Length: 142
Image 1 (cartoon, rainbow, N blue to C red):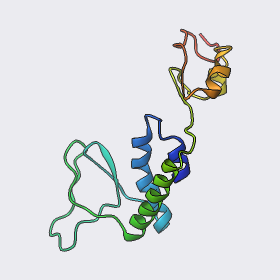
Image 2: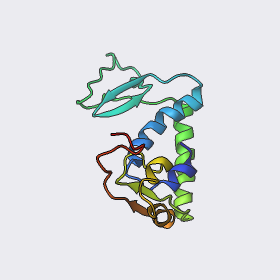
Image 3: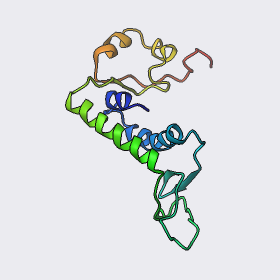
Image 4: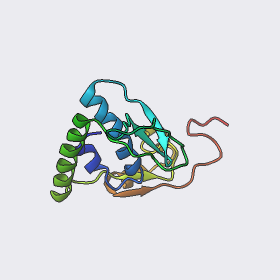
């Protein structure tokens, strides 16, 4: 969940999900406490605290809107520092990691070995789309 890894994987379709999880990871790194996880608006919310002088407890509905909340100052500082570093890495145009799709298991060598000749083509490709898997599983079981 480092800015370097996020910048390297910036073209991955899972980036938005990883960034959401990074918020919880940042809070853990900043506080060294396991984050309290809630769900609202179909996304994770970590250590949500009510705004100052808020008279009601926070209520979370997984499909509903998120209540007004704030995050811990140390976690917010880390998040801002990482965002600046991430932006600089993008500005410096760090190489993006290739995306492997079309094959359950992604970059797993056992899965990739099922398609001889494809792994070499995927080494240098920005996006690697492999043929659909056969009816047998990658380990050859029926």
